[in-house]
Image (cartoon, rainbow, N blue to C red):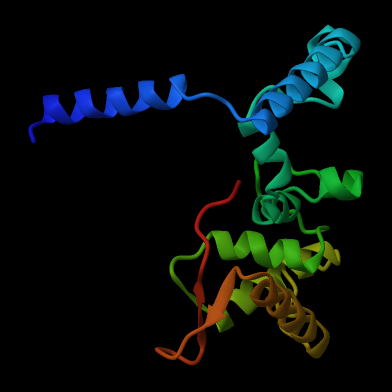
Amino acid sequence: MDLFQLQKALLEMNESRRSKKLSPFEVLRNEALQFIDSLVQSHLSPPESQTLYEVCYYSSSATVRRHLNAAPRTSIQAALNSPFYYLQNDRLKSEDGSVSNAAPDICIVYKLHLECGRLINLFDWLEAFATVVSAAEGNDPDSDSFGKVDDVKHARFIRAVSELEFLGFIKSTKQKTDHVARITWGGC
């Protein structure tokens, strides 16, 4: 059988199904469906004709999908990049995207992590964190204790790094024990 004959046979089968006599059940079912359809069309107006229908109804499935499928990583990155918008604290504002020394520890560590490559040396990261935190504490940049790591700064750094690891931004690596690997790339 070639393609033309197959198409002709399928069309004949389809016509024979349409011309087949309906059973009493099928006739009753079709009448019930037509009655329900006429009731719905006569008593319910389409949502597009209602005022502010956009609040409850969506005409695009992509819009619904975007609202239902949350993007937590993007929200977390936005919060870590600009904590001012979430905490509403004027001290946290930074104009040029630099690291604000008044930001929470995890935000400071996150912004410093964005400046690194694939592997991040923990000691260098700790030194950079201590420098930023020392500036936040108002220490004199010319003093010998500026940027020095004490136990409190070290504990704050470890906690912030653990939180970043928990959130899935970094992971420990077996290549180098004093390094962590970045999992995500870029900010928002």
